[in-house]
Structure formats: C-alpha cells, structure tokens
Amino acid sequence: MAVGFTLFLLSGMLMCGLLLHKVSQHGGSKKPNFIVILADDIGWGDLDANQPDEKRNNTPHLNLMAEQGQRLTDFHSPASTCSPSRAAILTGRYGLRNGVIHNFAVSSLAGLPLSEVTLPQLLQKEGYYTAMIGKWHLGHNGPYAPTNRGFDYYLGIPYSNDMGCTDIPGYNLPQCPPCESPEPHVTRLKRSARGGCYSKVGLPLIENSSIVQQPLDLWTLTERYKSAATRIIRSARERGQPYLLYLALAHMHVPLAPPLHSDEGRVYAASLQEMDRLVGAVKSASDHTDGDNTLIWFTGDNGPWEQKCQYAGSVGPFMGKWQTSRGGGSAKRTTWEGGHRVPTVAYWPGRIPANTSSSALLSGMDVFPTLLSLAGVTPPSDRRYDGIDAADVLLHGEQTGHEFLFHPNSGAAGEFGDLQTVRSGKHKAFFITGAAEACGGATGREQRHDAPLIFDLEVDESEETPLDTETLEYQAVAQRMARRREELLWDIANDKSVSAADYSTDASAAPCCDPEHTVCRCDPEHTVCRCDPEHTVCHTLS
Image 1 (cartoon, rainbow, N blue to C red):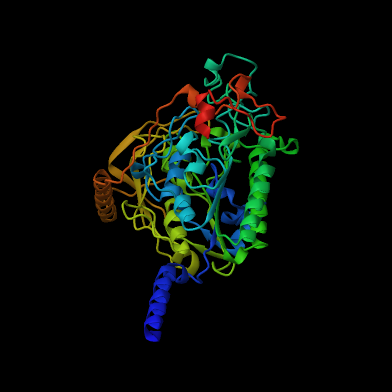
Image 2: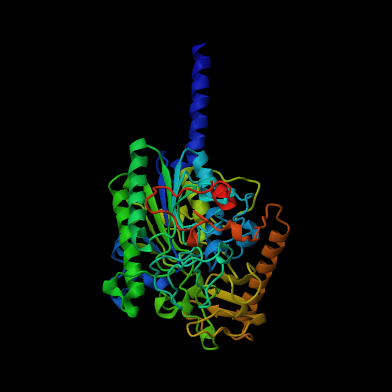
C-alpha cells in the first residue's frame, strides 16, 4: 500500500512538473504579470533613446525603461493602421487570417470575428485577471466588446479619439469643431464638410458595458487612465492573482496640449510627454508592487500619421525617400519603414538584461505567442499563427527573429490586407507602392512592380535607392522573396481557420448614451449614463 501511494504521489508530481515546464524554463514557476502598452500613431524617432544625438527630452520615463531594460530596434507593427494592427497583436495572426484588414467604423455592427481566439481569453482561462484601458477599435457592440473578448475589466474609448466630437477637441488637421447644437438624430453620423471630422455623435467613454460619459472630456482622460491602471496593478497584487493589463493610448492620434504648449510646433511634443508620464506612473506602480515578476512591453500600433503635418510624429531615419521623391506619404498606412517600424521597449527587472538592445526582426504579432509561452499556456492547435515566441530574444539575448516578415496594405495602394511587401534579413521587397497621402495632400500614383523594388536596409535605411535588377544579388533575393510570398498566400488560401470580418454598418450601431439628446449627450450628474433599453445601441452594449 505504501509503495502504491508513493508511486501515485511521484506520478502526480511528474505531471505537475510537466505542466509547469514552460514557465520554469524561463525562470521560476510563479506565473508572471504582463503590461502591454500600445501607443497610437507613434514614430520610431519619437523615443528619445532611439535618437540620442537629437538631445530631446520628450520621453524621459521611456528612456529610463530602455536603460533598465531592452530596446527592440527592428520591431514592426503587424499593420500600418489601427484595427488590423490591434487584431494581429491580440491573435498572433496576419489580417488575411484573422479577417481584420481595415478599420472598423463608428457605425460598425461587428468587429474582430468571434471565431478568433484572443490573448486575454487564453490567459483568463488560466486564472489571470485581464484588464484593458484605452482605445479598443475592434468592435463595440454586443459580443465584440472588450469584456466579451477576454477582458474582465474595460475602461476606454471604442475607437479613435477623432471619431466622435468633444466639447473641447484636440489639435487636428483640419481642426475639427466642438460638438454641434441640436439636430435630428438621423443626421448624427455624418461627417462635417471639413473632412474627417465627426460632429454629430459625442465620443463616448465606456466602462465595462456602460457609457459613463458622452461626449467625454479628452483633457482629463489621462488622469482617469492612470487612476484605473494603478488601481488594477495594486488590487491584483493584493489578491495574489497574475494579471494582464493592456493599455492602449491614443495620445498621438489627435494630440492634446495644455494652453502652456499651445504653440503648434510643441503640441505633438507636449502630448508625447503626457503619454510618457502616464507610462512612468504605470511603471512606478508595477515596480512598487510585483515589479520583479512583471514584464512591461511598450510598442506602437503603426507609424506617424504623416498627413497631419505638424501634429505627426517622427519616423527618424526611416523616411521612405524613394516614395517621397515621387509624391505621396511614407508613414502610416504604407509599407515603408516609417509606416510600421515602431519604438519598442521591453522591461522586466532581473529577467531582461538592463541597458541592452536587440536588432532581431520582430513583430507585434509576437506578443501573443511570447506572453503565452512565458505564462506556460499552449494556444489552440486548430489554427495557424504567424507570430513567433520571442522569449529568448527578451531574456537571453538571442538575435534570431523572423526569417521572413510580411507587411500588409493598410489603406494605401492595392487591396486591403494584401501582403505586398516582404522583409528578410537586410533586404526588403516591394511589389506595389504609392497612394498614401502626405503632408500637403499629395498621394503619389499607385505602381505595381512585377520586378519588385528591393532595398538593402543595412546601407539604405531611408529606402532611397533600390538594388540594380541586373545584379546577381537582386536576382537571388527577388526569387527567394517571390517564392516565399507565393507560399504564404497559398497557405492562407488553404487555411481552414481563416476568419472573415463583417464590415457592415448601420447608424443605429453607433454608441449612444441618450438618443434624445444632441450628440447623445449624457447628464453629467449621473455616475452611469442611463440608456433607454428600447434602443438597439444601448441594448447591444450590454
């Protein structure tokens, strides 16, 4: 009997050890906490630490995080615009697989396909407390809302901060007006004649499934976010529960600046500084609770919105000169480096070597498999993933990233989601270029390249002069790139796990706290805006 009990006990211990192996191979059996910070429309050059010779002081807290952690200098957003990038980060899959190939609208009925499995859903099942603060932009109605996609708690805006009016708008180009005076509800979704300005529906602030303010006050949003984030971090520690905090900050999408910095040349910098202070507050809260067991991963959803001119960020040296010399943009929405190479810092005291950098070729899609690996969680085996586990890059100084990394069309030339540009090592090949708006309005004509443009980024990071098509180097690279692109497209076409997003819209789908009031305005005296259950919008938010 004693022998049998001993064997049973040993077998149980062995099973437990196998289950914890994935966690322990990265150090310890305690499940780590994760803070993922995603900055909207941020340029690679906006991080001071990426351009120390510029001697700016816009991101001191991020600079400190980089000094105490690791800069990932060749890190790329999965797409060059909002919704597709966010979907790929949360699923580890290209947009052609997860179905999200362009942005969702204020009036979108759906969002990230329900067939997709998200990072918070998987961590939630493993006992993690999962919270999101900030911009969602993956569907705001019913089952598509954050609290139905794996988050226990949500506070934020359902889409970009310029997709609804506010009483005191941020800085924009063109400058958008405040919320309008009373008009019939049927006209509320129309944009103003100024182009790109939503003036009929107030921008809502949502907590879990309730609209708590509409239109929200953009100028107090950072403090709301800071309060919620620090509370989440401290509460999780008190409960002894591992957590995922996803903080998606839209500060740079439409910059805000206090009156002291109302000089147009300083507006973007002031907004960047405010975001940096928020990051610093989150880092401080983590450091003073469970810092040695918490990975903070800061990155961007895409590059700067170039057409916003003085209200856009810096691409640094990644200027896409081949395109800009022919007219058109080379940042957000494009597959030029400025559109998707984003500032990225990973910080984990005692685990990630301090003051290091890595030039491994990585993507926002890698967040999904890396965090799951560190948590000891195996993703579902019924689908294919495009992200890679970058834990060894973060923790052990490995320099191996993606062998090939594809960049999808995000609103410039070509079809939405088309994998039109491919990177491998130092080489980058373009199969189509053009059609993205630059500051001043020029777009550049769409050009398809049967013989792809190929750049050597080691010697030409500004992407100015492509390789001569007659050289052996060009011919070998072009053949390899084209073959790999064809293989991936075939793989996706035959992938039974591919999802398709529903992009249908209806005016009734816009989040609206009180349809009887102009711009759906809430009574500010109410802690929670009371919706009329007879209205579809209010009903589907819950």
